[in-house]
Length: 323
Ligand code: ACO
Image (tube, rainbow, N blue to C red; front, side, top):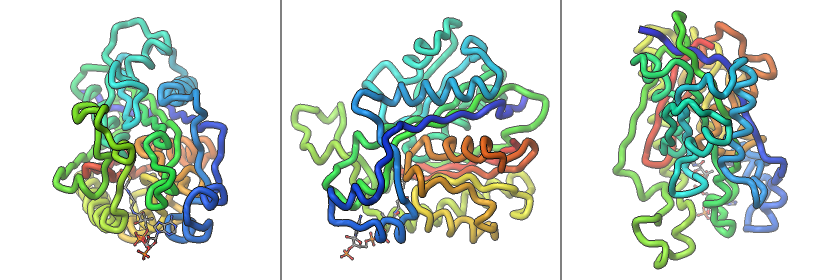
């Protein structure tokens, strides 16, 4: 049985940067409140004519280049997104066409909100382990700004847009040691976009097309479930906390990240933080953080990484990786 390895990483952020000061003009909030409660200082917002597909495409090109691969080398595309361009086709199939992939290999989206990248990585890894693919493009891409109510201070200050990508390749060496995916659907009301296609767009109340969150309850659940899943990943691999070189967490809130780092007894210097610059980019946040630390030289080949994410559903997951 083959293992999968990360051959290259890539990312893309829209040009437009929205600072906290701009949000002070939109809702009753302050830069100080946002920084203190979340760690966020700024976020990127997609241009009106820029879609999730555009973001995914730019990140994909970047990752293919880093991996030294051509689009037609890819034999599976998995895109994690909650903000697709259309109901169908999937972003993944549109991306396949945009990249010029003509080998008829499968392409599909997965939807697990902020845990989306962990889920997509799990899918890509298991396709390779099952010998059903040998080179997989795994992407997290979001235009979350499009499902925000810009009058709701509870949510609009938290999110941003972006995309991150990895190319996975079949290998005799172990890259992805294990992925650990979970969901508990009983908590829908705490974090959701209440309406959607099947419930009928014609009767849709505008506020029901946007994210609604009971932040405090989500916060407590995120800390607890992330602790459980990182312990599970370590145990499954017979590793100690001290074996981990880098924590690459989902970037929702610096206080959630600090809580996970404390449980792992990790110095914050060993935690990749992008929340201050990107906000919460949902499925894009883990691969964006990963690519940032790979490109600035912090993460080196051979380093042990613990990736983790938690979000709507609830859905959560972790991956233990040798880069
Ligand atoms: N500016 C100023 N005040 C605010 C703002 C704001 N932007 N937002 C809320 N407040 C107020 C509240 O109204 C409340 O006021 P009150 O005490 O008068 O009622 C007060 O601040 C405290 O509110 P809390 O919700 O208790 O604040 P908390 O410290 O929990 O921080 C936050 C809120 C940042 C949302 C935090 O709970 C959080 O990060 N939650 C988890 C988010 C997350 O991880 N989501 C999962 C991923 S997202 C996904 O899957 C789509």
